[in-house]
Image 1 (tube, rainbow, N blue to C red):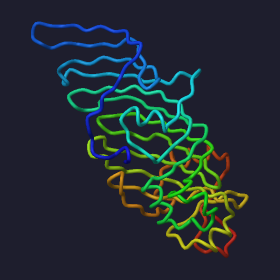
Image 2: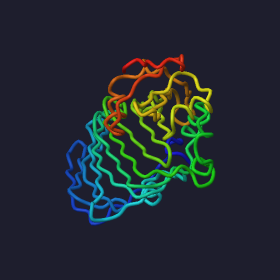
Image 3: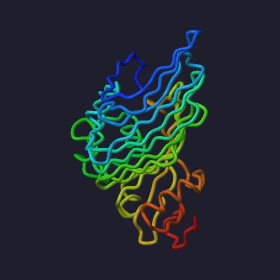
Length: 276
C-alpha cells in the first residue's frame, strides 16, 4: 500500500522514554517527551488532550546508526513496498486545531531503489523516455529504479507540504522536483524535471515528446519539464514548455548538474539557441 492510502489507526511504541505529564482540574492535560526512541530514531515532543491547543514533535536519525526505509516506514505505520535504501531524517512538525501549522522535513539517502511508484511510472510513460534507458533499470515491476542519491527538503505551511527541493540521481536518469502537496486531501501541484544522461540528437531522434528539451552547451540533455497535478496516487501528467518553469527550479538543476543550459528552438536545423 502506498503512503497516501486511506488513514488508519497506528500504535507506536516508545523506548527509553523520559518525560512528564501535567494534569489540570478542567481535565485538560499536557504530555511532554524530553527524549525517547521511536523506530530507532530520536523522538521528542509535546501535546495536549485537547487537539486545538497544539502538538509539536521532532524526529531525528542518529548519524552513528544506520536506518533503512524498508524497515522504518512499516514501523511508522506506512505499509509500503515502493522504496528501499539507507536514509537519514530530520523532522519537526507543529499542529494546531487539526491543521499542520508549520514544520520541516529533510530526508537524505545515499543509495536505494524505487521499486513501485505509480506516479513515477506514469511520468515515464507520458514523456516516453524509456527507450533511451536500460529497460531493466526502469522496470518498476521488478528491480525498480535504482538511485545513487536522494535529497528531499520540505517545509510545512498552513497544511501545505512545500517541496522546496527534491533531487534523485539515478542510473542514467536524474529527477528534480519542486511544488506543493495539500496535507488534507494529498492533492499535488509539482513541477518535475527529468534529466536523462543522453545526447540531444539521441533524444530528438527517439522521443516524440511534447514541448522542448533543455540542453547544455556540450549537447547533453539537462531536463524535460513536466507538471504533476491532482491526487498524489494518480495525478495528471503533462509536458511543459521550459518558459512555464520558474527560475528557482532551473537554479536547482544548474546547481546540481553544474552545467549552463539553453532552450533548444523548435527548428533543429538552426544553430542559434535562446538563452534561458
